[in-house]
Length: 191
Image (tube, rainbow, N blue to C red; front, side, top):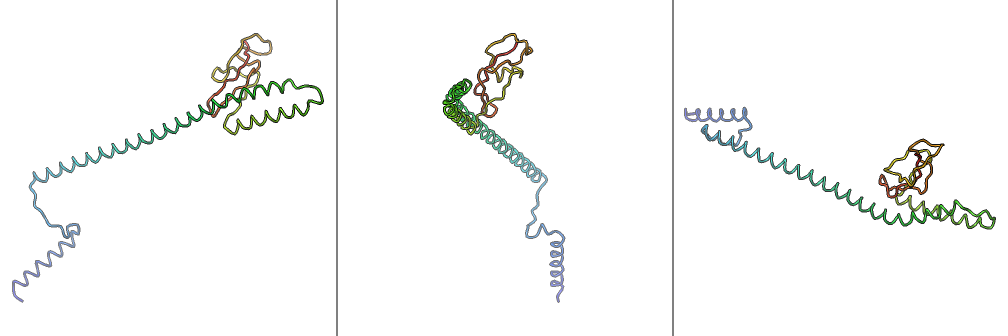
């Protein structure tokens, strides 16, 4: 072998050895950069990274805004449904109140027993249908403390059996849908 071929083989071996030591550079041509060019590239990378960060922040804010929008629409839809239901239910509450008053004054005659059972059945059906729609009768009893959020005081009166602020009697029951009062309970309150 000639000297030139030996030298060529030696250089080829060194190139392959360098490739083995630095596999990231395989197939990558080396480019010489000046310090200013390198500095400008670093600044450009930082600028692009800032743009990426700003875009990511904008994207995350948009996603959060959209989630809030969906929640607001869901809440508004639920509220609208409850408003419509409350409006319709109030008409049936009047009927339920009338039936309840009729049942308090049951006729004592034996022939009226079938009539009383029929009225009781109708009353229970109305209450069941209201409950199926999510309407609940509020549990208010004499002796409970008056709460202006769920009770409406019809009268304030002296009563020896109750202390001030206690409910003496329930004139008309109150109803709610979920946690929303659709009709407060009308009560007499001790003074």
